[in-house]
Image (cartoon, rainbow, N blue to C red):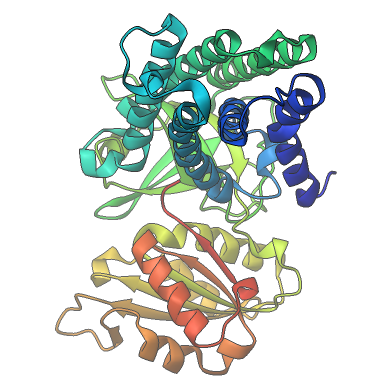
Amino acid sequence: MMPPFWRIILYLTVLVAPLVLTAGFNLKTEDTLTYNIGRSLGLLAFTILIMQVVLAARLKWVEKPFGLNLTFPFHRSMGVFVAGILIAHPLLLAAGGSGWPLLIGLDLPWYIWLAKATLLLLLINIALSVYRGSLGVKFETWRLLHDVLGPAILAMAFLHSWYAGGDLTVGPMQGLWVVFLTGAVLLFGYHRFIRPWQLGRHPYRITEVRQETPQVWTLKFAPPPGEHRFDFLPGQFQFVTLKRNRGLPVEEHHFTISSSPAEPAFHTSTIKASGDFTATIGQTRPGDLAIIQAPFGRFSYVLKPQALDLVFIAAGIGITPLMSNLRHMRDTQADRRVLLLYSNKTENDIVFREELAQIETGTKPQLQVIHLLTQPGAGWEGEKGRLDREKIQRLCGNRLTTSTFFLCCPPPMTMTLVQILAGLGVPDSRISFEHFSL
């Protein structure tokens, strides 16, 4: 398998390929440096847009060494980056010789107006992606808009670049542009239509719906008759589309797998009712069908075989990937020493409380659980308040110099804890974290 480093090199090679071809076949030496930089930014922007399709397609070959927890944020960051490039592109062209009417004139060729419309749609797409929560846009609405705007932006960028300049008069450049666009169209079609259709032909079946706390439910999935359950690592997650009929929404969402891979006949996801879709989880019934694409993620202790001393930190429903890891340790009698710091609002919010206590009584793993409540009842005698620097230093003690930390909390809490651990001398190499949301 190609190491992650070479995947990065391949990504960069694709980005610069048009620049190399242009330099070799069609570089206009009479143009100013400013103008040539502007032209080059336009070519670079198109290849970045092409690679955005690759990054978003959930390809195992791309995702496996990095995890979607890294590739999806990188995808978003590159979207912002390409917008900056496309803003600089006409500014440099105008400053380098095309003149300012390129920016403010009205008597312009159609492909220039097309470029302006492309940039506008790209900025709208980025704003919806980055500020979806604050704008109150539902996930499914955003995804539909993203799947419409993305291909439209790519097609418009292709047409503009094809007609706007002299770069694509060179045969190799034309061939490369056609290959890029064709590959992106085929990959998008496979990701959004063909693969869901293939998975839909072999749906999983819900065999149990169990309420864990007033707001949390566990769904048990069984593979299609005659088929084996997919393999996964403890702590990985899946994309699930529930087919429940009864007027309930049909949407794809990602949920952590909370069961152990050592259970061969089924797997589970434990889900908190916290949004429009998840509020209906309790209405799921045994016999309902689910289309599943899995597994994804790298939040697994088995990927760190040398880490024998672990500290797990979870908040609320963030316990689910860590529970999968602990269950797998129990089932395989893994010789690991684990401290679990588990934060919740109240005692009623503690998920898997009895099972965690049962694992504590065993010898493998050597588990110690410390519960923390931010809104404790009158009879609570355990840790109180938020997990801060003082608590981490006191509860972890010497583990700060030896343990590997796994964090699964809401993003602001995760970032705060990472800063605290760094301040206490824990290097990045011993900190792994998983966000609730991609």
